[in-house]
Image (cartoon, rainbow, N blue to C red):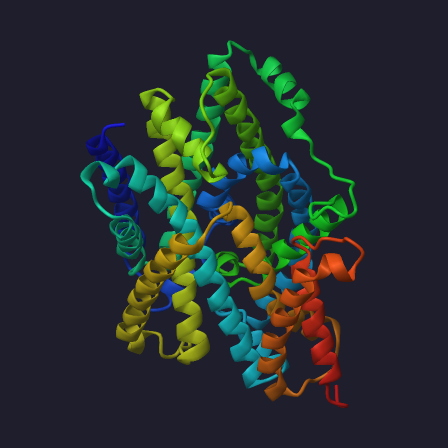
Length: 480
């Protein structure tokens, strides 16, 4: 694909995003950046959240991962539904009742200062790492499609990516994100449908034949019943449920969108339709993964060394021009729909949770907010470069593994707060929150030796959260 065409497509796409930013930031007051003034239509939030949940990881990494682990990922997707049910019935009523801007202020009300700061810290850590991994993918695609042609290094692609995000989020904040996510979700889903359609036509199939071919392909195997395998159904299902709870329900990024709805009822409707639609969209990505491997085999195309590179390689080098353009729009939308809201959420959490912003002083601290927003932009840039230097596996696996360690303390803290009436020794909480992930790592490393060949998978999140819960129980006070 011509590099100048690539530049024109991406440039035009971001001009649209900046235009949306200008429109949505009109008449914005100081609170708009953080809460959207609680006026977002629930259906708009639900549709936009699909893009934010999928990100560039789903767009590239999930189809590629089909070659390594079939459709085992869908076992986790089924578990998501249970997790979203818990979010809608347990967490959302709590957040709306307390009228929260940052969801981690709940921990201060429930336990105290150090619990609050510990929760906010682990969110910041989780989101910085997760968002950097996601942006790493789109920077890699830009490098292949544009920057390599001019001999520019990878750091230039990364810097370009993060600066573009900063440009359209620094003014409107979460109100802008709700609208740009809607546009980006549309591009993403359209890209997948068109890619599937192109491969279908290349085989001269109709839609029924496509469904039959995908169904009988060994790579479309969903369930794994080998109890020693890290992708066993029970482990994947419950890991999926807890991952949904922590990466959506205990995540300021995702909950900040939900909290812009007018009321609890609208937010719960948003969660219901979002969860059902997400399952269908995930199936589309897994179907695309099977088709990509079939297409490569039929055309005798050598597979790339890393599965994450399969879709970009085929779309840019082997699909027709329209297919390449659609892919480029899709991956750009997928990556930025997740990263832009993460940048806004990181800024919100740091300003509210660590700098003490509140509704009374939002207007007086605009300059500080702008500095924090820029600071997190630069931090994402540095972490992406570090990840590029050390990563050697599928990005979807990297994100889920890291989430098991960084979100575990949040799972333990919130579950102890919601499901018990005990108070804790607040000054113990930071030590418990650090010790539990370290102990989880050791358990994971030696699980096969200690547990008769049992290999721990993504359920390390549950183990981590349970260790935090036990630590809080042992350090509880006698009062309730």
